Length: 607
Image (cartoon, rainbow, N blue to C red; front, top):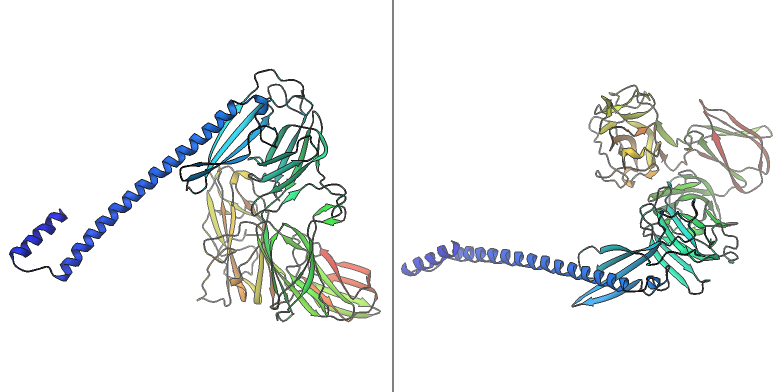
C-alpha cells in the first residue's frame, strides 16, 4: 500500500512537471529503511533459532553415540580411565562437528542397589557394585544453550560375586550444617596398583558415594572446592607442614563404609583500618591475624601477618568463616580497642569492616573488653575500676550497642523512649503473643503471608560509625522458606519533621535487605546520629511463622572503642579489677597480675 502510494506520487509529480520536496524524499527513504531493517532483524532471529536447534540436535546425537560406545563395551570395561570404576572411557573429550566444538564429560559410578542389602548395613552387602550409573554431559563451547545432560544405567549379565572392596562416602555441608550441592570433589589413590583419579561433584544431599573402592590404608587423598567457597582437604600424616593432621588421608576397608565430612561455605571480605582515637589514619599498621580452626596438632588453618597501607587501610579477600584473634605488632603503638570488639567473628558471604584503634605505647597497658553475657555484644556504660595499693583508676566503656527485645507496647511512638513500643506496623505483625517476640498474625488458624514493622527512632548520642546489624534467633523453621526474616535500616544526622528516612540494605540500596545476622551496615550511614529499622517477616507455609525476639546493632562514636577501656602508665604487679553496671552482676578479681607491656583481659557480665 505504501509502495503504490509512492508510485502514484511520483506519477503525479511527473504529470505536474514538478519534483519532490526534500521533506517528502526524506520521509519516503525513512519508511523504506524502517521496513528493510525490520525484515532483516526478523530474518536474523529466525536464522539464530534454527541454528540453535541444529546445534542442540547435534549435541544430543553426540551423547547418543557416547552411550552406544559404552553399551558395546564389556561390562568390566565400563568405567573412566584412571577413575573408579576403572575402564576405557575418557572423563572428558572434545568433538568437532562442522565449525562447532563440543565438550563431552562422562561420569560413571557404581550403584549399591538396596534390593540385596547395602554395604555397612544389615544385611551387609559384600558385593555392593550392583550396577553402574552413566551420566553424559555435552556442552557447546561457543554456543548459547545450557549443557545437555543424559543418564542411563548398565548392569552385568552374570550374577554378582563376593568382592574384596569397600566404599567411600564424602559429605559436604556449610557453616549451618546444610548440604552443599555442586561442590567439586577430587579424589586420588596413588597407592593402588593403577593410580585412581576421580573428579565429581556433590549431589543435592551434599554427598558423593564411591562404591566398590579398593581397600587402602590412608590411600585416598580428598580435596573439596567450589567457586566462591572455602576449601577443605585431607592431609598426609607426617607432612612437615602438618605432621599430625585432624583429617588424614582416608582409609577404605573391605566390606565397610568410610565416611569423611567436610565443611565449606561462602568466602568473605574483611576490610581493616588502623586509626587513632581521633579517627586519624595510622599508616603501615602491622598485626597478626589467627583463626580458631585447626587442621592438625598446633597447626591453624589461617595464621597470617598483615600491614595496612599508607592510608591505614587493608582489604583482605577470600577469608573463611571463622573467629579471628588480631594481635597488634606495630612498634610504638598499643591497641586501645577495636570496632567491633575482638575476637572477630566472620560470617559466610559477608563484608566485614574492622577498625583497630591505636594509641602511642605507654609502660604496662591493660585493655579491658566487656561483653553482655546474654547477647555477647560489647557492653556500654559499664564502670571499670582498677586499684593498686589504694590508688584507684575509673573508666567507663563506650556505648557499644542499642537493642530492642519487646514490642508489646504497640505503635505510635516516634522517639525510642519506651522500650516496648515502636513507630508503625501494617497490622500483620503479632507483638503480644507472647510479649518479648514478634511474629506473623495467626488469622483463623493460618498465619498471614507477610508483615512489616517500623521501629521508633534510636539516638546514638553523637555522630556515629555503624557496624553490624544483629537479631535473635538467627535460624528459622524450614517450612517458612528462605529469607523469611529481612531488615532494612535508615539513618539521619538530624531528627526533625523534615527528616527523610530512606530504608536500605547492607549495600546501601533500597532494593536489598539484611538477611543474615551480623551483616555490616553500608558506609553511607557513617557520620549520622539517628537510626531506625524496618522488619519484614514472611512465610511460605500457613502453618508456620518466623519469630524475632531481639534486634540490635553495634556502632562506635568518634572512634571510641565500644565496650572497651585502656588503662596505661601501670607498673607490674597485682591489681584489683571491678566492673559494675546497673542490672548486671558485679564482676571482681582481686589479684589480676600485670606482667607485660600490653595485655588484654576479657570480661562477661551476666544480668
